[in-house]
Length: 64
Image (spheres, one colour):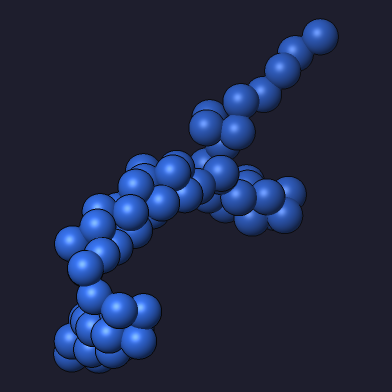
């Protein structure tokens, strides 16, 4: 029995078959969790409402 590896197929063949190569994730959910903990640690001395304000400001700055 012959098997095919999806990595061996060209983009045109994949499209005809209705397939796509699986995405390769480098920034995993675990990494996201670890960074969130680090960020919250920096602002842990603030009250919850103050943390909320700081995080909202950070989001606005990130969009610019």
